[in-house]
Length: 405
Ligand SMILES: Cc1ncc(COP(=O)(O)O)c(C=O)c1O
Image 1 (cartoon, rainbow, N blue to C red):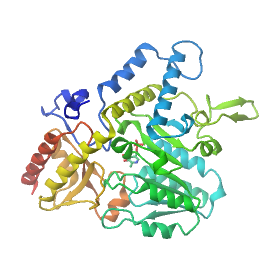
Image 2 (image 1 turned 90 degrees about the horizontal axis):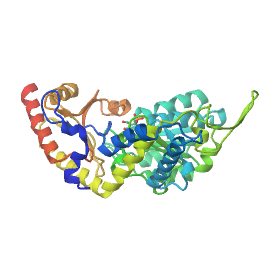
Image 3 (image 1 turned 60 degrees about the vertical axis):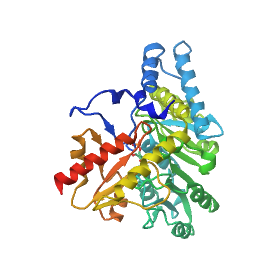
Image 4 (image 1 turned 180 degrees about the vertical axis):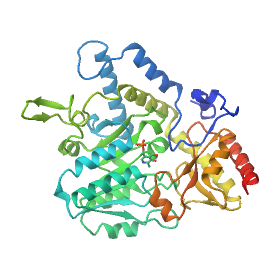
C-alpha cells in the first residue's frame, strides 16, 4: 500500500465539507477515519453470515464464532501476547480500565497501599483508579511532570519506596505527545511487586504494541483510534492474572455451571466476556489490524513523524504560539496555545476551512492545571494526512491571526 495515495482508501475524504472545502482531518488522536476495507468487513458480516457467537452449532453461527476467534488470535499476534486467552474484548480503553480497576480492587486486601498514575493521564486512566482507591482505602499518587513534558522518573523511584499495589501509565500522552519509557516504568514497578497497567490508546495506532517489550501485566487500546470501528477495544492481561481476577461482569457465556444457589465461571477470556459480544466491532477490528499491518508500522511512524516535525518547525516561527512539551520523543500530535486567542475560537474558525482540530482540556484536566491553562488546541495526525494538510492548516492559522489578533 502506497502511503502517498493512502487517503484514497478512506471514503470520507472523497466528499466535500458543508463549507464546500476538502476535509482536512487533524484529530486522529481522538478517533481515526475508517478505510474501505474496515467498512466492507462489517457490511459483509451483516450481509452474509450474521449470527450470535459461541452458542449455536448451525452455520452462520459457527462461521461468526470462527471469525471472532480468528480476530482474537490476530490481536494476540498484533500485541505479542503468549496466548489468545490473554485477549479480552471490551468496548474500548475506558471500559477496559473501569472493568480492570473494579475487579482488581474488589476487596480491602490492598488497603494502605498506593496506586501510582502520572500527571499526564487521560481521565480514563485516572478516575477509575481514583474511585477504587477511595472505595478500598488506597492512596492515589501521581508521577510529576518535568518542565520538558516528560515524567520525573527520579520522583517515580521515590514514590515506589512506599508499598505500591499498581502502576497505571500511558504510553503516549494524548496532550503532550510524550512517549514514555514504559519498559523502564514497568520494570521498576515489578521490582517492588506492583501490578502494571499500560494505556496504549495512543501508542497502538502509531507504533503498534508489544506487551513483552513493554513488560506490563495489563494493557488496553481502542479499536476506533486504530482505524477500526467504535465500541470495540482490547484488554490484554497475563493469563494467570486474568484467571485469578473476579469476572468483570456476570451473565451468559462466562459460566461453567449455574444453580439457583450459585455459579462457577470459565477461564479467561470468556470469564470476562459476559453477554453478547460486539461481533461486528470485533470483525471490523480484525480488518483494521490487517490494514495497519499491510501499511506497516515503520511506514506509519516515519510518515507521521515527518508531518509532526514539519509542523513543529513551522509553528516555531509563529509569534505568541506556545507548544506544550519540549520532549525529544514525541508521538504524532502537537498541542499549543496562542496568546489572546482561545482554542475554541480557533477551532471554530478552522472549521470554516474544513480543518478539524481539537480544542479543550483533552480529558486531561490535571495536566491543564499543571500548565495553568484551561484548554489548548491539538493537531494530531493519522496515516492519511499529508503535507498539503499541514500547508492548509498553517495557511488557515495565519488567517485566524489576521482575523482575531
Ligand atoms: C491516552 C488515552 N487513554 C484513554 C482514552 C480513552 O479512550 P476511549 O474513549 O476509546 O475509551 C483516550 C482517548 O482519547 C486516550 O487518548
